[in-house]
Structure formats: C-alpha cells, structure tokens
Length: 470
Image: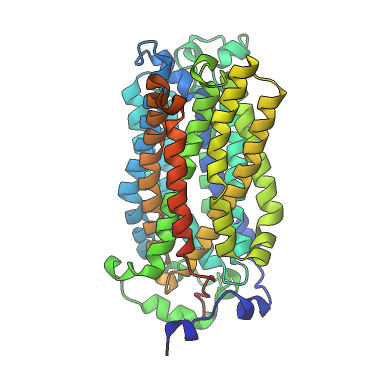
C-alpha cells in the first residue's frame, strides 16, 4: 500500500474533525518571548546606515554604506547558521527551556555590546555573538509544533508572522525615536556618555525586554519535550494524545542523515529561498529609503525610516491576525503559498517606479506615497508565505522527537540564506547605483529572477499538509 493511502491529510478528512483547543496560556507566553527578538533586531534598521557613515569607514562615499550595512546583518546569520542546528538538536536532549535561557541571555548581552561599539569591528563582534548564542527561533517553532496538531496548526502558526510584524512595528519606531537622544532631548540626556554612545539607548531598552522575557519564561513557561516534562503538565494541556508519549520518550537519538528525505527537504528548500528573498527586501527597503535622491533613493531621515517601517509592521500584523487562518482554511496552504510568493516580483518593481517618480516630480509627493502603499499591500500578501511554509515543515517531521532537528535544519538553511541575502542585495544595490547597471536597477532584476525559482519550488510542495499526529 502506498504511503499516501495511509497518511491522513489536512484536507477533507482532517477539516471535518473538531478543532483542538489551543493551550492559550502557554502559546501566549511563547509569543511574548518571541516578540523580544524582532523588536531588538529591527530596532537597529533606522540608524544603522547613519551609524556606519559616522564611523568614517566609507570615506564619505554614501553609495558604499550599503556594503557595510549588509556585512553586519549577514554575519549575524552566518553565525546563526553555524550553530542553530546544534542548539535545536540539543533541545531534543536537554529540553527546550534551557536552550531558550542561553539564547535570550546571549541576545541581551550582544545588543548591549552593539550599543557600546564605536568601531566597525565592535559592531561585527556583537552581531556575531548574538548569532552564535541564539537558537531560539528554531526551538520556539518546535515548541509550537508540540503544542498543536493538524486541526489548529494554521491558527497557531499564524501567530509567528503576527508577532514578527508587531516587532517590526515597535522595533524601528523605538530605534528611530531613541537613537541620538541628546539631539531630541538635550536637557534630559546632557551627559557626555550619550554623545560618546549616541545609539546606546535603543539597545538598552531592547536588553530590558530580553531580561523581562527571561523572567517570564522561568516562572510561567512549561517544558514541552516529553522526556523532560514535569508531571503536572499533562498531554491534554499540550494538545497531544497521551498514547503517543511512550514511544517518544524511548525513541533513540535519530541520525541527522536519515531525516533528509524529499518530504523534509522540499519544504526546507522553499523556506530557505523565501528567507533569502525576504531578508534581501528587508535590507533593501531602509537602504532605498535612506539613499539620497540623486542616487535614486528617497533621502529619508532615520526617524522617518523608523515610522515607515513601523507602518509596514503594524499593517502586516493586523492583516495576518485577522485573516491568515481563515484564508488558509479557504484557499489551502499550498495554493496560498504560491499566490504569496508571486507577489515578490511586483514588490521589487515598486522600487524603480518610486525612484522614477521622485526624479520626474523632483521630490516625494502623493504619487510616491501611493506607490509605497501599493508596495505595502503586496508585502502583506507576500508575508503569508511564512505561516504556510512553517506548517509544511512542522508536518514533515515523522515524530515529535525529531521535531527539534527538523526545525533546526529549516532554521539553519534559512539562516544561511539570510547570511547571503543582505550582503548580496545591498552590494548589488551599491554596484547598480555606482556603475548605473540597467539604469541602477540590476539588483531588482536579479531578485525577480530568483523569485521565479521560488515559484517553481512552491509547486513541488505536497498538495496538503499531512497530519503528523495520526
């Protein structure tokens, strides 16, 4: 008998089953832990280009800022790619909570070091430290998979892009507002410390969020790994059946190579390419907004960039929260993924169109603002691809005991892609502007071609999300 004949699918059969209630308290705590990370990571976006310019390493060449900004962001993902799988595999053995403690502590220390850095090398070391010590993303997705089943998976995984979007709203707004506080509130921040470390305040606030997250996790979050779970946390609380606990507790440590089947590799490949294109866009957007108008950008200030990125984040979060799970139920995860990734090409086209409008109208006006809002709508649709691909990756795990390893593989691939993305995108942006390649638009053409490859990869996903718990 074929495997497809005996594997329950998240389609007609599965949707007839009543939805399992979500363990709301545990998921709420998990999402609050997750929220601290995007706030911290995106808080540097509004001022990173200005910080690099003030370091003097570009020699006054505004077009070269993109190279260094891309290097800083890419090195974080290089470091994460080298260690995240080890953290995820470790969480399969010692539990999820100990790994989260290490990750949150490392993120807290590294963001403080970033705010105190006055050299390019200091910025690089602090970001690498954060990447090496941070395996939280993969572990949190693993915990979410252990807290859900096929009936409520879409509802639960919709929360990840929502939380990320909220973080993308708060982070840039916080970074843009609190950067250089001595300029905004000279009476309150008159001490020379703030002149020496003008970008420490947003980093200090982000570090406080990590400390708060650590306290909440230590007190309220329950372990979800069956072999490390405290007796009072029942399988009903976790949303898994009690009869599956015994084989999971006694199952041997699974070799990594045995997990590399097409069922696992195809969703991970889609996630990696999706992450590459997404981080390329996220790196290009603030660079485009900050680039002077004579080079084809919009010439926004850090506070304006922070406000605009905040608008992107809150609009995305509201839409995902209200509509993602409903759209998945109606359209289906594979079809929604393919629709979402098809929006990337028009997202890229908005950049040269906006640049042309600025030059044609001699400045930013209502037409330019309209194109930015069109890009925002397309990005909201694009971001739904993340929720769907997380569902495919989680469902690809044959048992819960290897769920950490599967998510670790996915996060390693995504981190490697995100390591290449910012450096490649920002470098291509700089080269396109410096050498006027395709009218300065070569970077957008390259990314559109890669988006076509992702659309093909999406067609290779299973037609339905399989029910791992059955």
